[in-house]
Image 1 (cartoon, rainbow, N blue to C red):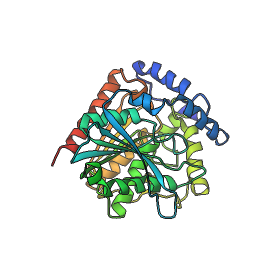
Image 2 (cartoon, helix red, strand yellow):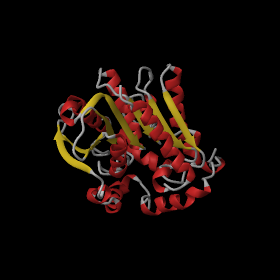
Image 3 (tube, rainbow, N blue to C red):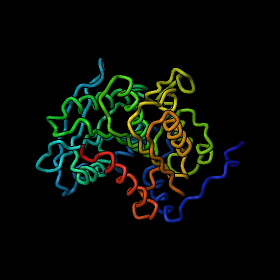
Length: 327
């Protein structure tokens, strides 16, 4: 079937203005192999300085350089703590989006600040190497190394090591899933829960939802192809692709931390996110899945006042309250 044969799910009318703003601001330049660097430059122009995103919120920021994976460069972390410090606090380990080819650890820091204040938590945002300069599994290994450092320094940071959450949207959601798999297979650190928001999980790009949004909407099928080509190179579409950076390829999804999986019904990642939840449930694992009617990719961030966006945020916070309650 041609792309035109796959009728897309219509957008919630209340989200259409936010989608238009997203496309005009973020995806003004189509993401293709020869425009990745131009898109990075453009992305840098639309991302406000960290100080602006933090504003006058009562938090302290700290930058740390910590050991990276064995044989790889050190990695940078931004640590966000409630002003005055905390003890025995939950930790929110945040992994940024951008298709694993764009962005940096400041992307989404405003949302991390909000969660830090809502839960009295310590937030940590990790810088990871981007493709194509650093193909898989560089990104997921960097993210895992940062998580290991966080767990090993929990007492110093005022963190309860039994209440560490990994979270991310889009590429960050896929990498959060990958970090959870690595932590399982390497015997730690213990993760209390994984928050996978519109997660990028599968390089194959063959689902119905990827075809429904081929040339349509935010982060369409073409952008996804570009990103996965950069991440995997010749390993794409083969069993040589790392299942830690492509979590949909992991054969065994048992014994994972509880997952919160959130996706729009009107975006390419709908089907792979749903399938991931189904496969977790099939092992007896815990997953809470939300598929939001009419939601485009990242809708709650660009259309925050829409009714469906408020519902999505409330659902995520409810899940976090249940997972992060004190022992």
